[in-house]
Image (cartoon, rainbow, N blue to C red; front, top):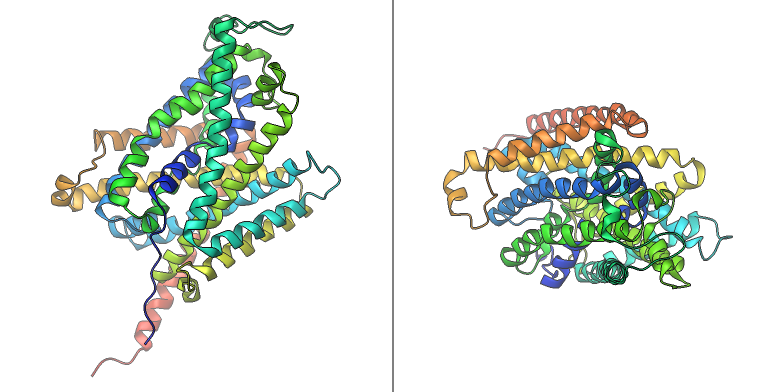
Length: 460
C-alpha cells in the first residue's frame, strides 16, 4: 500500500514575507513608472495609494478566509464552498489563465532584456532558457521555489531602497545639474499636483492596476507555508507600509529629483536617477534588476499555475493525472503542463508581433480583477453562512461588509475606465469570450459527471 502524498509545508516565514513583497512590487514600477508619471504627473502617487488601499482590503478578506482554512488554490476552494461549484471552476481556470498570460509576457521581456548585453542573440533563446531553468527549480522542492523568489524579491527591494536613499540625499543637498534642481517643490511647481486634470489621473488607474498583479500570491502559498496562522497575517498586514515605502517613496523621490514633465515616458526613471549621480553602469544595473523582476514574475506564474491545476484536478475539474505528486511532494505533472503552455508563448513570441502581448496582458488584468472580486464575494458569503466561525476568527476584515461593497464598486469603476483607453478597450470586449468558453466547459463537465454517475452500477 503506497503512502498518500501531500504538498510539503516547506515555505518558511522569510519566504512568505519576501513573496508578499515581490507580489506587491511589479516590473511595472521599474519600466512603467515613466509612462504613469507622464500620464498623471505627481497625482500618480495618489493613484497607487488608492489601488493599494483597496487591494489591502482584498488581502484582509483573503487572510480571514485562510485562517478559517489554509489551503493551496484557496480562491477556487473558497469560491466553490461559498458561491457554488460553477464559481470554483471558472475562478480556478481564470487564475491559471491569468498567470499563463502574464508568464508569456514576462518571458518575452526576459528575451528583450538579455539583448541589452547580447544584441545578436535571438529573443526566443533566453526566453526558452529562462522557462526551462525555472521549471527545474520548481521541480526540485517548494523550498527551492521559495529560495529563488526570496533572492529575486531582495534584488528589487535593494534597487528601490537605493533609489530612495540617493534621492533623499540629492533633495537635501539641493543637487543641481544642467537639467534640473532636486527639490520637493518639483511636485507642485510644474502645473500642480494634477497637471493633466482629472482625465490623466483617471486613465492612470488602468496602467497602475497591472503593477499589483500577483499581490494575491500569498494565498496560493498557504498550503505550503510552515506556520500559516502566524506568517500570513504578518505578511498581509505589512502590505500598506510596503506600498507607501516602495511605490509612493520611489515615485516621490523620482519626481522631486526631476519635474514630472522632465521624465521620459519611454525609458525607466530609475536609470536616469542612477546616471545622474555618475554611476556609469546605471543602465546595466537597472536592466539586471528588471530582468530578475521579470524572471521572478515568470517563476511565480509557473508555481501558481501548477498549484491551481493540482487543486482543480483534485476537485475533478481538470484531468486526474495532474493531481499526482512526485517523490519530493511537488505536483510535477501540473508543473510540466503549465510549462508546456508557456513554451507555446515562446513560439508565439517568435511568430507574432508585440501587439498580441499587449492585448494578452490587458485581458490578464481584467481576469485578475475577476479573481480579486471573487475573493471579496466569497468572504461576504463566508460571513453570512458561517457567522459563529466568523465571530471567533482572529483576523477579521476591517469594516466588513461595508468595505466589501466599496471594493466591488471600485473594481467596476476600473473596468469602466478600461473602456476609455484605446489599447485596453479591445481586451474588454474579447475577455467575455474566455468566460463564455469556461461556462460551456463547466456545463460539459457537469453533464459528463451526471452521465458517469448514471452508468455506475448501484450498490447492492
